[in-house]
Image 1 (cartoon, helix red, strand yellow):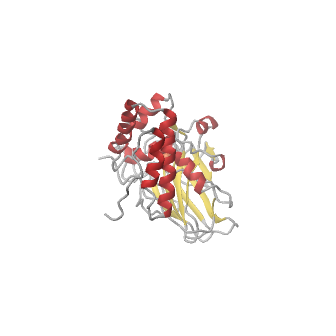
Image 2 (tube, rainbow, N blue to C red; image 1 turned 30 degrees about the vertical axis):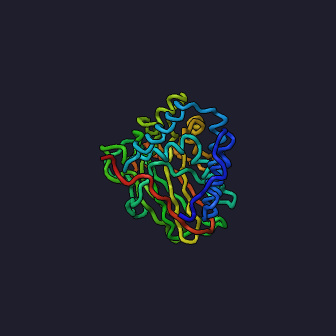
Image 3 (tube, rainbow, N blue to C red; image 1 turned 120 degrees about the vertical axis):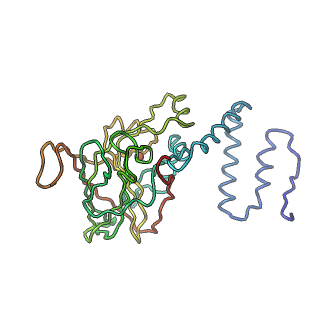
Length: 308
Ligand SMILES: [Fe+2]
């Protein structure tokens, strides 16, 4: 107990609290933890003082935070969703990935990334169970910021079905439906087949839904496909390619849409020998991902499996 902290004075007024608490944390040995917690506590106290929170509001807020945990399980991550709908995830994304070195713009990971998606061969279709909607052929290259092809890059792809649900949310979809990993060839090229994504509402049966209703906000996300592009020697890219109208992009409930990562989805009304096996109407999209040199990393999946 020789590190026990003794306050220099007892608290008697509002203005005493912040300095006393900061002093209590002053011996934090990890300098970054000390910096982050000092900033967090200072701003949190400032927020409480500015909003003049009542005891009922404080209790309500604590219950809301606890409910985020209660609504988090192997197939739903309400904590990630909460960070997404108040713009914090996009802010973190922009602080850490701003596209300033010529790399493709990133976008938030979202709550529905699952690890261990099956490795696929080039050209494979990721619709693993009966999936409605128009077919999609997605092709492109992974290149370095200077234009060289990145061979052996792994693209981890996932998307919602055209009914607006990820497989983890939907008992009618097979395990890992619309999820798969593809590896680039010597020219940096990749190629996969899927269905054209549709916009979807984020889950609204938990505390995040309560908040969105109270704020009269639509829970919609514009149609998109998620990508993690991983290659040795390069910074990992976490992004989404959008396939929706400008109005839908502007109304993104998690503020993830960016102009640079809107895909050009071309509609084909007749079968085309260039795309054998594709039934009309179908879509094609070509998008090249640019990486910058750096240390690869991988996000921790917010969920681990399908709805029980
Ligand atoms: Fe998504």
